[in-house]
Amino acid sequence: MTHIITSSLFFVLLTGMNAGAAEHQHMSHEAMQTADVVKTMQWTDGEVKKVDHKKGKVTLHHAEIVGVMPAMTMAYRLKDAAVLKSLHTGDKVNFVLEKQDDAYLVTHIRRVK
Ligand SMILES: [Cu+2]
Image (cartoon, rainbow, N blue to C red; front, side, top):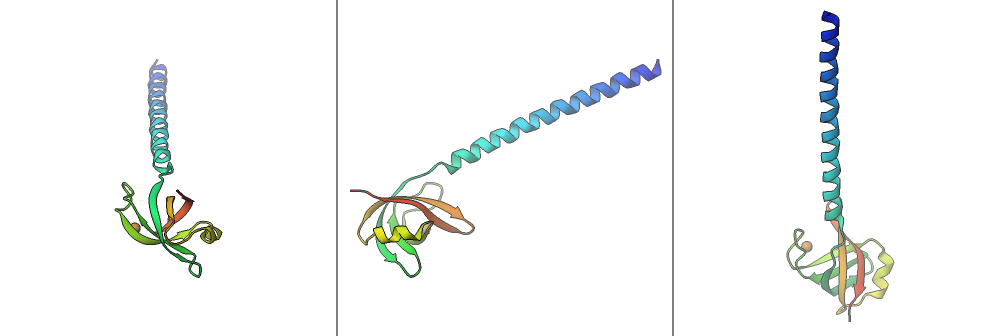
């Protein structure tokens, strides 16, 4: 008799633990979805101020990037340095930044007319 009571108590404990684990997984999944939203491409308006082929950098004067940095003029490295060839001082552009380590990298850039 004592043995049966002990077993059912043990069963309740196990069930409780499983429910807790399921809830935790669900919370992690929601956190992942939030991270995906942050990664969504954010196009910013800018103007090319300088193209530095030696350093593989483009200096952009750009509008505020909400949550990232205020409007400023700043030199950026490009993910694909070959794109520099198609950029010229004075070009009006749209671009997307991606944070890599401590630097911001231009992953996408297109001229706007
Ligand atoms: Cu900046």
